Length: 113
Length: 114
Image 1: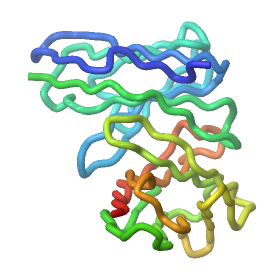
Image 2: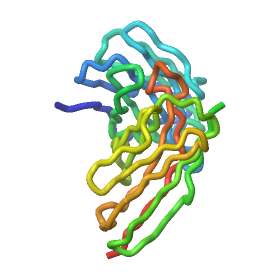
Image 3: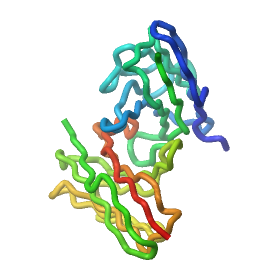
Image 4: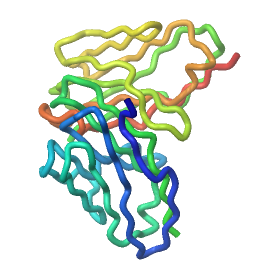
């Protein structure tokens, strides 16, 4: 059971480039979310999904797009990378609305130059 | 807006000590509270989840308590070991219907010295 898998682990982009961070879970969890973690600012919610075909914005959604075509996958797209998007990105999933723990992937460390 | 604060930001103790980590939240109308551990360069691992109707949860040497009325939770670690060195975060869902929509504290970085 792999849990939550994020790829790539590391990525360097130039300003203006676009890319997709991948997140997949094999636990049949309905709820998935993306966070970014920055020193001194903790974890902040970017986007989340309560099921296939349903997504919504979190606290810091600007510059990011998401889609949820399947239960398993929840990719995060950076449309035009900016240095302010340098961060560690975490994907999380949970099986229900709040009674069960969040499961996290190991993160993607992104640097934008 | 829910705000979560963790004090202290860093803590260094000798091996074998019992210790307490603190988590405070501003909105007491919470659904649950979760404690996580994060090792350097890794993701977050769930340690304990306390439902709003519970007062505490225990797992091995870890005990988490919850006092909704005062907006506080504590994580007690008994007989600390060097392997307990990590950053500990608490999180509170901002929605009663979605644990994935959570507010996190900045964490307490614990160092246990042999």
